[in-house]
Length: 475
Image 1 (cartoon, rainbow, N blue to C red):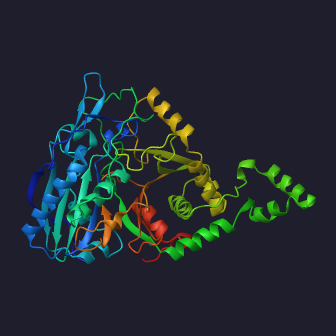
Image 2 (tube, rainbow, N blue to C red):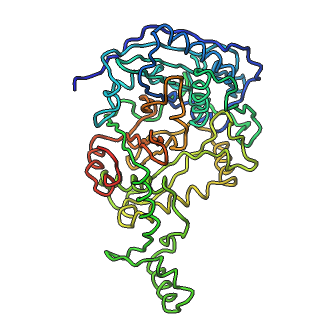
Image 3 (cartoon, one colour):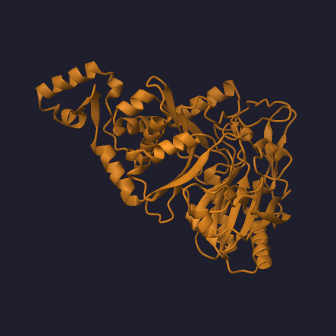
């Protein structure tokens, strides 16, 4: 297939303003917002088949819809501002958002979703390429790019990551789509309150000229989508939850059977004690059911660790972005607008990840996430307050995996009036070796797509990994 690079031509850029004046006060950035000032703008978008609207009619319609939507989300038409004492605010001043219209008539829908790797042209479907969130002091918080393809249209949103997380982003896109198709009483109403432990008196000091991204933006990478059907994920989950074992040298002893009989059989109780004395007690897996998503994460962690060929003593890290809205006490509103996420790391040596079974790996992830409740969240806040800093996004030691986004986000509910999306894709923003994003599958019903970004040699490794590829639904 011929290269599709440089196939997108920008036709126009317009500033869109809310149809109603904002009455919101300035919103102080939280301890979850401020670390994102060094991150790129989030870039997420939806691919559709043709809208069948004339070009100018489509653009005019989406401009009007965006104007109405901004009245529900006035911060997205605002700008960042820093007070004299160093606190950063989101000023809802109705300065407007950008809407960009572009053409890519040589690109077909099949070019975007076909093939093995995600084509580079997708990066051209988004504005504000490589823009850092701190730049929201001088550029719009939001840009929507509408790109007409030969037989489809792509609507890509670039949004300041110090202003919103994935939950808030998709709430906005869902509302934009509802307004576009004529819904008068929108479903979602963002909550702009700033009364929680996340709002802090601590000041983040930034270098002259603003913070920079903390990873190599030019490192060679491959990116592809691995799809998993509901049936494949349920099979994986059943396997993970059934196989609970201890590994001793090259043999296995089934821990479930031993523990299950322990109360009725003194001999088995003694056997359990002997096994646990041979191993650290931390090696004993819990009886908690592992979720489908944690099972999938464990599968991926193992495959990437194998492909990277680390020494067995190398510490590897799997980070998961966890929504804390419902984990705080008192809880935040589910529609809380802003970042309400924390990065939850799980550590294990390469030898542990690979020599023990997948249940053990999944159990480590499960325990890390389960423990991240109100007390732990407040400890993370306190730690940041003691040393305010930007989030060190990247893979500095070559042994990390970072999972973002969520298969629970309503990405395929974005019907702008001509049907649900064919696919969801993201731009260049915040991508590095080991960055994974989870999307719901288009078929719904528990299917999942993983957007996987890896160094070329690591990607080649997981493509040949039998354990991993067994559950992938299409190549």
